Image (cartoon, rainbow, N blue to C red; front, top):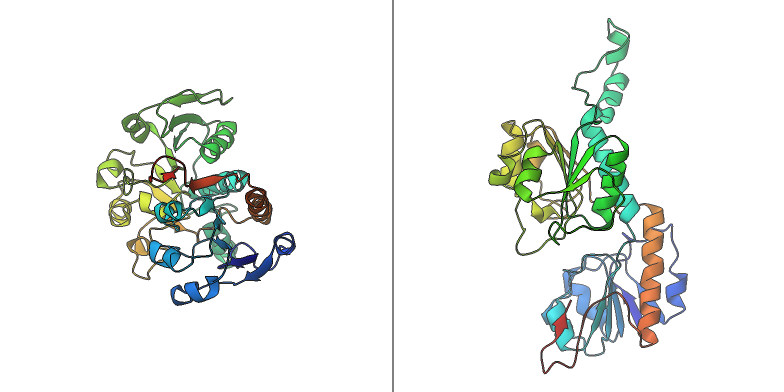
Length: 332
């Protein structure tokens, strides 16, 4: 069985092993695959693994041997799942592997917004402390989080784990879930389920953890930003297209909100003229919240297990498949 990994470098830049996957078939791993090389490299493969390399209907039409696509991530929008289902190709993803890592990174971004530790460390290295007339100084406001409100949009595993940590810091928690205000099982004592309007108005920190859908693309825009507190922070470790970047840049530059910390952007890698690069009080990191070695190790293990289960005729973590419902594929 021919197994091809189209873009393995991000998952495994050299600190993990492909050994378990090698045991399952004739394995070829490419660090990256440009668009014009996809068909050439994937030709004859029964199994394809992809992280961000797009597999659209045109590509799938040219790969008659393909039976399985393993997405090396939780989000699977890089695959045309409708076309895959029509062709009887199983598509799987990797859920839950990054829960702790992304939640931890979310809180790290919040703490950085509150204390600007990196900025002050650089200030010291530039000699500002040595030249100071005082034994202590700070040149950005310092913010205590206890008693403030942490708003979670998308109260799944990651959102609730971030809320747990925020609660431990003494913050009040409000949450909006795509399931509505249903009572998810959680032991966060001070969590309150609210509607979007209330979450926007009462939160001191709003953290996005929801999947991107046709209904919520760009929902952080001039209308929602204008209802937030002027002292509020926005954090996004979910999907870049949840945010209208021009509107956020305008809001930051005109002090509608106090700051933003983003690990994701609408286009990745971003163009050099992204308006957020010149926005005030905006921190941007390169989509790295998921990438601890521990999380990547779990991702690799799950990718292997997904393939093993497929080979045994018991596929798991399936996001699309063909079912006996007439000629209509079911995508879920």
